[in-house]
Image 1: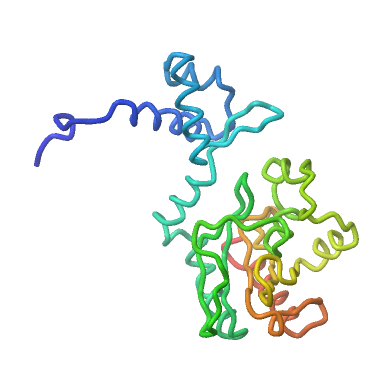
Image 2: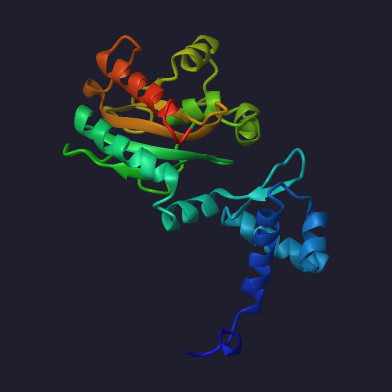
Length: 246
């Protein structure tokens, strides 16, 4: 077997990964001066690498603090690479059982700095194009977006909360209801006749680690907490919260 060190490499790619490695190893957001200290990249070149990584969502910059975080694209890569991670092992049976019970497509999304990103999904037998694939960023007016807004980490939801986007949930009564009942509804947020309902996946510390969403034709998706399907999903939410994983 050939020695890895003898093979040709692309130095610029290695430098780009060194920036990502610095953020990963510190396990906290970094200032650009800290990144420079850890990578030894000249300031003029570092900005070029930073801008490229930002453009591809490999890192994220908080506009207010100026701090850099690992980006949502890395989460998408990681979710694909470690599909047998505990969270997936725990969630996958629920995806299938919910899809079978409701006869609708079921989505599992993870919270990122750009919003909830689809990490796994189970499609129903219905002839329905929900307009989403793994890696899709779900918008604020979706039921998953509402769950993210209410239960998400404040650092991740900060730019949503400060945005003037009219699609971001602002009804205080709805926010309180979502927080209390741990369920959110969205009537035709993206596609006519297609609606969704979502529940949060919370860990032992009540932190949002994922979002389960049912997507289907509006006539088959509940709009209120009183609906029998809503009660079923709330039961699932409580069961996950009580599981050994959490």
